[in-house]
Length: 120
Image 1 (cartoon, one colour):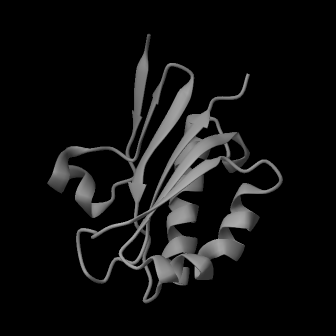
Image 2 (image 1 turned 30 degrees about the vertical axis):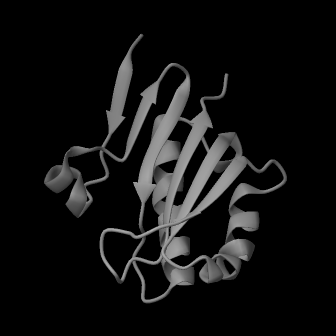
């Protein structure tokens, strides 16, 4: 089985020792992604864009997502992201889990991890 690693050049990839996504076994595993912005909505929008770019580089799309995990330090902020999530995943949403937890830095409001099935 071949494994392909996708790097986005994000500041934490080398610092922590991971890559944005790994393509293996017919799946694309996208690392937990925190976007840029001053609030949870901006960070969610940014993270989804980074994830979409990684999936595209792997040959997949958001429509191929089969699993998503949302991690937030304040679960009350999750509802603010719902419209973005519905739009991102369309009519075939993945199985999802939302976890309330601490993130690496206090200004981080949401981290999103996705697994997608490669088409074909």
